[in-house]
Length: 345
Image (cartoon, rainbow, N blue to C red):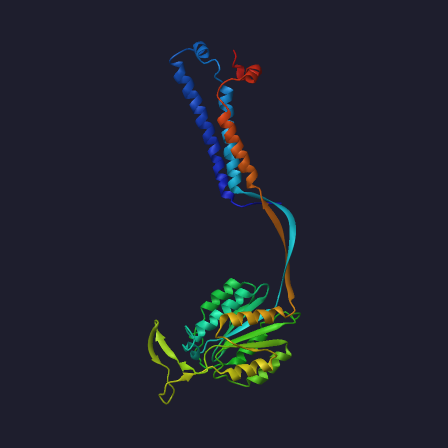
């Protein structure tokens, strides 16, 4: 079993016939030019050791050296052994709050961007796990189905914003219900849901929904983003502040981190509340949580271990180039004995 790393360099082999034609043209030109000054018998007397065979041999050596360089650049790889790689992990779903309160800037740069940074760093710390992402505000919507493609998941995560849901509010119950549909592997014993939110304005009987999720084997961990002191909600257009959100009494709205609500949800679903102010602390805590869980084998693939072979061709090319330098275009004793091409006549 073999692989060719850069097969495009095979095009260098087209230079070999060009080199051969140039050498042939040079021999013909040299013969015609010399014939203008002396006849064949006189030329043999003037240059008795001149060898046509040696000239052709040098062309052959250069062609072989070029072929070896081409193969070295192509870098053929030979498979030496088969390796089985198993993918084991936990199904992890993130529910991201994209309500307007997440625009508050009591944590830099704002709650929503901080939440996305937290989720991104958690994904970066994962290994063989599968992930899914849900967005919610006044309603919940699937953003990324359960997948092992972390790069695509992070790409979709970065595109999430507060304009994705027209109805405002915080329908955490809908997000939990939607998360139930993400765990499509009945044999998966560990199902984890991370709710990243400021915990404000949760609607519905959250405790009852969390209990139901716990009965399905879903552990809910909540990550609070924001401060208990709170901050106003800026409304911006093209990055420029227009005004701060106000209520029906025209009073400025101050949104605060509701840790009690998030702790209640986590407690009812056999989980834990994490404060999201420190990204490193959250990532370390999540890593410890997931490492303590039993891993489910998702898939096992066989891969062939290939080793580079370019060094052999490169060594051969250098040897042929050295040989070409040492190979003179004159007859030698062994060549005179062989009398190739009737050169002694």
